[in-house]
Length: 181
Image (cartoon, rainbow, N blue to C red; front, top):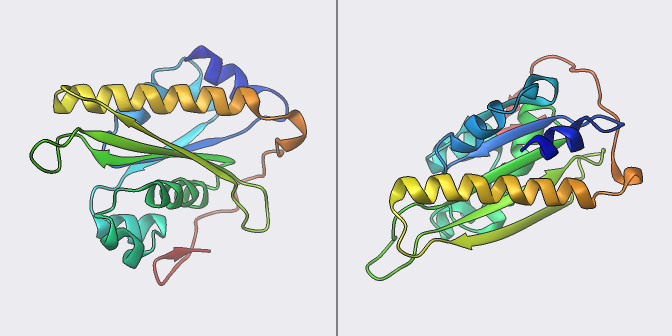
């Protein structure tokens, strides 16, 4: 985890925000456990329901309802929403099923990472991890660890020219129709 800190604080420094569902705050807790996290971690939100994902993160309701809030696309919208909500350079999100959604199914979680590129553009990467035989809390812990590993890899592979300088916080965001502006 210290590699995440070093990568976030490399010049130019980046800031980080989190949006969680399936991991229920465990990703935020893992990041907050990093000594010096306050130098790059702006905060996070655990948005468990469709209504909260739409209201706070700007997730498209029709898309979310079509997939029961569990897809790469929903995770990607959540990561972008975290960037917007906290005015962060990087957003990371998780959504999935910590328990089997139906008999015989395997618990799985989607993670996504968004990078603010300016002018409302957010290149995003995402991935899916499955946890056969894991309990609910094991899935949450393992998914948070997988998301952190993905973040570390993403940051390590990010060319210096792709990093954007940190912008000053311009005050609270205004919400219009469930979208942040």
